[in-house]
Length: 72
Image 1: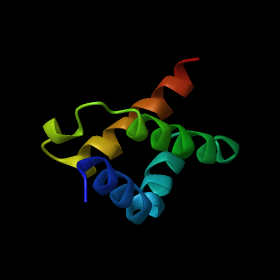
Image 2: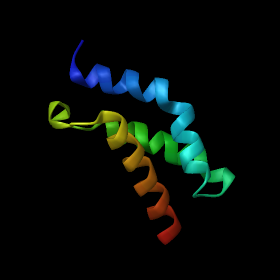
Image 3: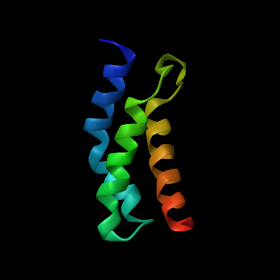
């Protein structure tokens, strides 16, 4: 299994957690968009093998996207 596939599998298994984290930051109608954008960002990573802690990376990405939504 490639590192990219591992990241996608980790995302799928962590989706509920990501949703809960994002739900504390953005309005309910925006949660799914943020979660989906997190998935897109994970899929676009070129050098996934350099990520030390993939779960933390995903959660941080989701939080940053949620905070960026609030800023806009």
